[in-house]
Image (cartoon, rainbow, N blue to C red):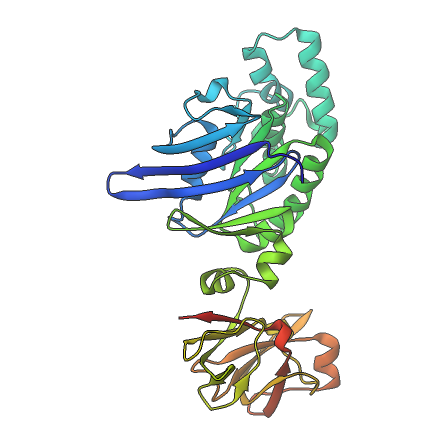
Amino acid sequence: MTDALLSIKGASKHFGAVRAIDGIDLDIHENEFFALLGASGSGKTTLLRMLAGFEIPDAGQIILDGKDVSNVPPNHRPVNLMFQSYALFPHMSVAQNIAYGLEMEKLPKVQIKSRVDEILEVIQLSHLAKRKPDQLSGGQRQRVALARALVKRPRVLLLDEPLGALDKKLRGEMQLELKRIQHEFGITFIIVTHDQEEALVMADRVAILKDGKLLQSGTPREIYEHPGSRFAADFIGVMNFFPVRENAGQLFAEDGSVIAAGTPLSDGQQGVAAVRPERLSLIPKAENSTTGRVVATAYHGLDLQVHLKTPAAPEPILMRLTAGDAEARPVAEGDEIIVYWAARDTRAFPL
């Protein structure tokens, strides 16, 4: 990986007694689609506002293109922020909304028209250039707001929950659209979201924040398959947890069964073993197994979700069967079944 375009070094921010950002170190690279992921109150929006220049860090630095911009005002940073509300001017056409920022910079009209036409092609709205915002769909308004931010050609585009106002189907479409536009423009995108799926689908890398701290960063696959903490394992996707105690190099579940895990605990330590629902199988070809009774099933089209009560865990565990597997081996409420999973798919975390 090349040198970072944007480096956050030991950044902290307090609001009274509340530590919103607590000593975060993070590098974000040129042309990267980066997601800041966390629950409400995790500090992700405060960090985004610090990158934009609307908040000044109490400690640490924000380095952009090799320059410390920690105290540089927002209008003097090569950064643009796209808000969730879109904030389009209702009395202006699509083209006029996009051109507004360039007009404020007093660029020549020929240059403004050329850049507006170019970006209308990229967002595929050239045919709607003369329409007003209230004549557009939610997804079209989102693209206009994005174009208005991109037309100024910032080094970094910051997006604050940009898809939050869209319905589920449209949000899925716009996730792929944002990824396409970012790829075409080659601009670094940093998106704030609390939606795990959104972060995993769009981002090249994801940072998980909790209580103002950076818990983990990595590719979507890395943080999904190799969570660095129980919180990350529980926050990203769905995870089954088995209370365990380590003894003589083995992990013992509540029912006395042994669980082989990819990450051992220290001698005598209590913790939890964790495995994803899609890693559970009815095929007896793995190191781990547990017997249980099916307490509920839920058909989701692509898969069948099976809730299983087992003595190895206090709460029912979840297994996902593909449609094909569910047809080959029907499972119904009340059935006693054995599920299996591999040691390589198991993580262990201390309490």
